[in-house]
Length: 267
Image (cartoon, rainbow, N blue to C red; front, top):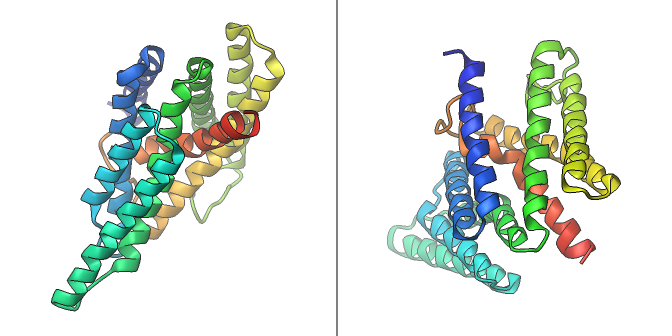
């Protein structure tokens, strides 16, 4: 089976699962978001562990609690308190290690766990919260479909016609032609969705433009992590795509920005 066909089949499965989860919402969306978030977190910790010891179990438990608390309407103050608490737990363990064995990695362990929860899990917390809003279904459909349109346009055009390197030191296969095509694909998708949802097109087109730029920048962030860890992919659980972090890296920054726009700026 060719790489493109494998990528297309596994991508289609992901699309069906995500869109079904958004449509049904409730506990199905929570479970689906939790699986993706925690699998991505494990891969992030695996990258980070190449530089030192990481207490992965504590981070995974904290991540699961963050997602569950958000589904139950917990305030973000409670989520922040949980993040601080897990830092104290890790520091307590590292302090005991130092006392007992004269070995510790408190700074690295705490910073690794905390950065994973903020960078990987918190965006999925935002998605769980947004789905509970009256406009959540349409917003999440648009977020994922525009992000995927950006990825597909950038991949196909960049692979076939890309000639101008873009961020070569981070991602050698990225091209300016692919970047522009990805942006265009996201904007086109947003315009089509505005017609389908019967809403004013301009705000949704601006949303698509934001996703088309930010999502590709988010992809570069994850590529930077992989370059520093000297690995090609964050994992191998998704055929043709690598790991969960590889597949959903653009969603992380896009969900964060969309949450800020709709829950902070426009609220």
